[in-house]
Length: 434
Image (cartoon, rainbow, N blue to C red; front, side):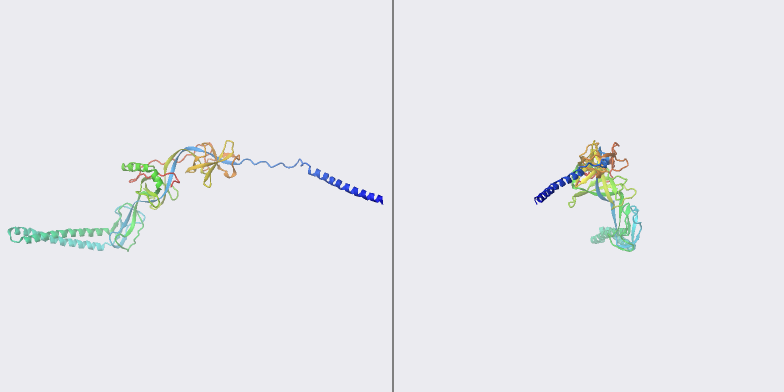
C-alpha cells in the first residue's frame, strides 16, 4: 500500500515534470521556423521611375507695345433722313434699295397733278395782279399833269397813287405764290441730298404720304464712323493728349496713333483709321464719354450698325518679361509659374502678371530673364521634383524654344493722317482700368 502511494506520487511527479518539458520542446520547434532567413532566390525591389519629361520655354525680355481695346459700333459719317415735304400719294420709287446713290438722284415721286394745278392757278393770279398794276400806273401817269393844271383834284391823284402801290404789292404776293407752287411741284420729286447708301424704303407705292413722313435713309459710309465709349478715368488720364490733339486739329495737322478695327468675325480691317475728339460731355448715368473715329471705306464694305472693336497702342513697355500664356497657372486670383532651375528641379513661384500680348503674357514680378518655365507637362510635376526639360518645338504655338531668337511682338501701327473733321481722342489706359 505504501508502495502504491509512492508510485502514485512518483507518477504524479513524473506527470508534472513532463508538462514543462513538452512546452519547452514545442518552443524549440517553433523558434527555428520563425528565425529562418529568406531564400537567396527572392525577386528584388521594383526600380524607381525616371524623372518626367516636360517642355520648357525661355523667359524673353524685350520692348512691348501695350494695346487697349474698346467696343463700339459703326455708323454713317452722315445719315440723311429722306422725308416728304408735301402731301400726296406715293407714285414711284426710282432707286434700288441698299445701293449707292448720288447727290440729286431721284428716289421717290409723289403724284404731281394737284401741285401742277396749283401752279397754274398761282400764275393766273399773278397775271391778274400784273394787269391791275398796269392800269393804276396809267392812271398815275395821266392824273399827274392834270392835277398840276387843276383839271382834277389832288385827292383823285392821291387815290390813283395808292391804288398803284397796292397793285405792286399784289403782284409781289402773286409772284411769291408762284414760287411756292413751283417748290411744291418740285418737292413731289424726292431726291437724295448726299452721295451714299440708300436704305430700304419705309413707304410703299400707293401710300398716302403726309409732310415730314420718313421715306428712307441715305448714309455716307466713306469714311465710316465708329463710336466707342471710354471711361471718365481714362479721359482724365490722357487729358493732356486731348488738349494737344485739339490744337493739332485747328492747324489741320495729323495727330494721334492710328486705330485698328477688328470686325465681328475676328478679322482685322485692312485700313487704319484716324480718331476724332471725344464728345462734349460725360454721361452722368454711365460715367463714360463717347469718342468718334473715322476709317476709309472706299469699297463700301462696312455698313452702319456693325459690331466693331477698336484697338490702338497706348503705351510702350520697356524691357518687359514675356512668357507663353500656357505657362501661367491661376488659382483663386493668384498666379504662379513652374520654373526649372539649373539642377533641373521644379520650383513653383508666385508672379504678378501684366498685359497679354498675342499668345504671350507680360510678367511684372517673380521671374528673371533667361529662366526656363514649364509650358507643357505641368500636371506631372510638383515642387522640388527633378524633371527632364526639353525645348518647346518651333512649330508649337504659344512658346519660345530654348536657345531660339526672342519672340517678336507685333509692332504698333504707324501714325496716319486723320480723316477730315477728325481729331485725336483720349488715349486709353491699360486693359482692366475702369
